[in-house]
Length: 82
Picture 1 (cartoon, rainbow, N blue to C red):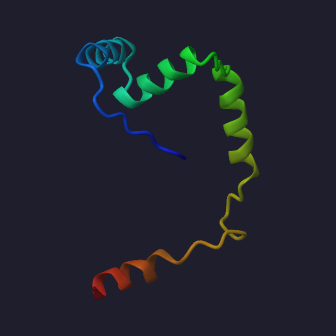
Picture 2 (cartoon, helix red, strand yellow; picture 1 turned 90 degrees about the vertical axis):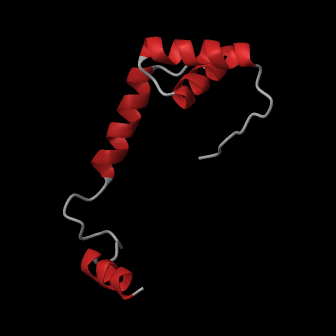
Picture 3 (spheres, helix red, strand yellow; picture 1 turned 90 degrees about the horizontal axis):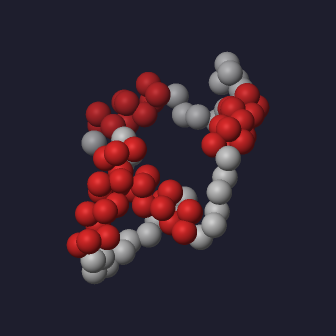
């Protein structure tokens, strides 16, 4: 996922964003994303987004037999050798 860094952000904008984030129990980053989306007219229905995530999770294998994840024991052993 891309990231964005904003330089020389005016203090008044920062404080307002921080205040809104606190009221909505969100992180500053989450609030910035929501504020940008609203300003750009991008409104994704939270229920629709949640449905898409649940569908993607449902398609993933449960038992791990079809995944190519490395054995965690091997990873821990390699890490300890460093």
